[in-house]
Length: 101
Image (cartoon, rainbow, N blue to C red):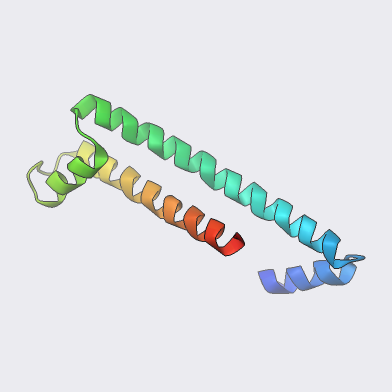
């Protein structure tokens, strides 16, 4: 019994009704979503710090970095990495919300 689906089936068997199971799973989903939102907030703070330090927003930075205009300084790779992580989490959270709607 290693897969998530198997564990959900165990919960369903142990639960006295489907409302209880749904409430339990909703709590798990909420917990995981909040964890990702906190991570995203941290990434956004990092992006805001870069934007303030270098007087450009992340979108402008990415255009200039991708075109090679900024060179290969380590801070550019850090900024690009945080932007990618933030974008990935934003997409994940949007898909989660769309799937729950």
